[in-house]
Image (cartoon, rainbow, N blue to C red; front, top):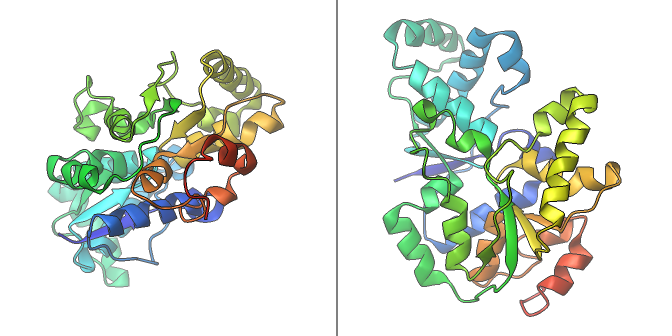
Amino acid sequence: MKYTIFSGCLIQTRFPEYEKATRLILNELSLKFEFIDTFSCCGSQIVESIDESLLYLIAGRNLAIAEQRGIDVILTLCGSCTYILKKTRLKLQDEMIRRKINSKLSKIDLTITHPVQVKHLAEFLNETPIIQRLKSKLKNKIYLKVALQNPCMLYRPQRISQIPPTETSLIIRLLRECGMDIVYHEFQDKCCGGTILAFNKNIGEPLVKKRYEAVNKLNTDLFVVGCPNCQLVYNIFPSILDSKMPPSIFFPQLLGLAVGYSLQDVGLSRNIDFEKIKKILKNLPQS
């Protein structure tokens, strides 16, 4: 199988450490993946709100590029990217829609024949042969109490995600394998509010502050996310909104630490709470 990582736009510009940690995990699992530097933004939110046909063209182009390069599975890191690419892949089953998109893609020498599979990293790592291989690579147990925010668009709507509505524990399962105790909070499986915060502060700010209040009551060591929009909300915005949160990090960074990489290796030095994180993870390799 041949894989590629679709990092979208936000990860490349704000959180490259998320992709870096993901690459380390894939290398550790001896999985072949190819870097594609011609992917674009998936089109979520902005294009999606203006012109749905243009959204399918943009996302279709990304799928066509992957197909042209012989990719079997696109691994996504963002909830929104996962949703848009899966949604487009489903739409492309309609021959009429596929013909319309291909007529435009042909102008740039691209075509879609068999749309490539799309899986969020958490979804992929939970597949039986993959998680078994990951478990065999674990070297460090991380005995911490953590809370998390599930990428909401990873799971919904179910007709697009194809993940059973009762199965919202993909990231939880991975963290537990590494020794962590997961503490539930009422907003864990709901939207983080990042999109609303970006477009309407009057609604968004009170909404995300409710999430901060709920998490702070848990007295956890760390907060864990699997989407760059969530990291903006839980890592960047608390200081802007004069709020407090435990340090927030990406789940593959914790997986990387568990298989033996250092804090520097997985890119935690880029985190604005790095000094706090170093103290929390003082028993693990720092560099």
